[in-house]
Length: 125
Image (cartoon, rainbow, N blue to C red; front, side, top):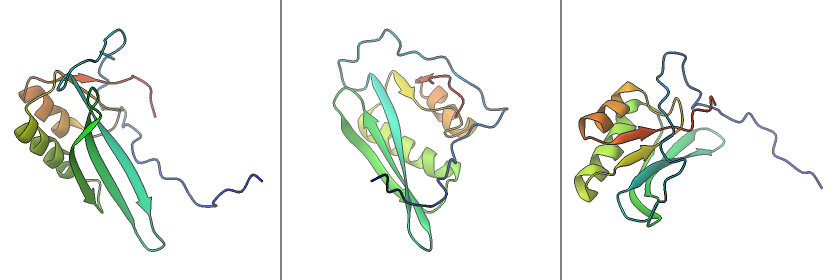
């Protein structure tokens, strides 16, 4: 029937021009073991009066949720907190894949200080 909800679809992960774009490191990689590649899933939940962000940090090989958080803001401290929690509990991955504009310098700084490679698909959102 072509029925569709009528509301503004948020696009909060558009990168700023000054954000660094990292190379895509997964092009020919076969992901076979835990802690090889992690990624973060962002889900935006809208209600009538407010919205909420759900973050889930995933291990791609095992498809396991390593950490999960809900927030009403998109501050970088929220992203860093979930990353640091997962690093503390599960060790560190070889590569962390995320989209351009996802978290900023604070988040990628935590990855770099832990020796984790950063991978992006290079597409501008």
